[in-house]
Length: 291
Image 1 (cartoon, one colour):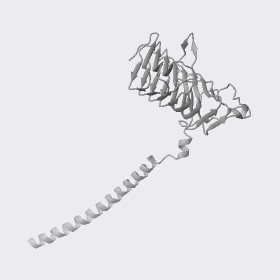
Image 2 (cartoon, helix red, strand yellow):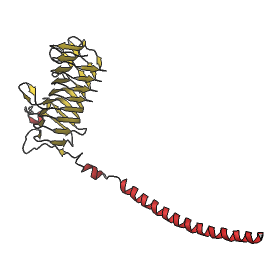
Image 3 (cartoon, helix red, strand yellow):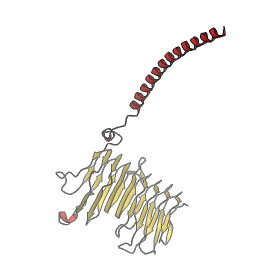
Image 4 (cartoon, helix red, strand yellow):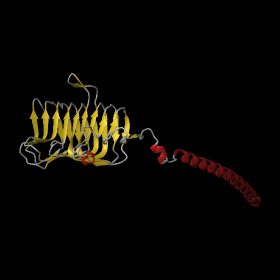
């Protein structure tokens, strides 16, 4: 009886194993099918974007500015409508090419609001008369380039002495060698720039307008052509200004110098600025207050 029971159990175990093998075979095929689909779906969702697709993306696209030699006899890049623009080459020239005269027009002239110019690491330079980047409008943004023997001059519209609109003039990642930056606008942002002044433009950064943010710049002033006061930053009407994390250097005489001069502006915040070789770190005129 026990022997039959053993045989009976043996036959039952063999049948169960066959059934289990069939079940496992079906499950393995089912799992393999799911895994294959997961791999395919993963490929579809992780497919890399091609460089051409990134270049043609509206977010990064820009209109390249060129000198129109047929329309302008002297070098000129001209912007008269809103948009994103960029530079694709260096522009280096001398006024001697035009018998010593470069004319009075700026090299880059922006007569529009809501304009962004990305220099893409290129250089503007001119020997002789200083080169000018001029802008008249609201929300002008210039970034990522180098200017030699020149200056940036941005003017936002005013009405009855007050700036119109938000005027978010923005200068970032620009090196100005032998020159300066002048901004007449509210809410200006000047960040990560390196400006070395010249004997004719002794203040690296001048801003007229409330609520500017000036941070992480390196600003260097030098001896001037005339015996006049020299400053690293000149702020007028600059209430609510934030001056933070800048390095301000003086490579000329210390007499009659100030790292920052505040003219008629209240509530100016100054934080973590490094100042070297100035007679005064902060000079105040009018009703200026700050810390």
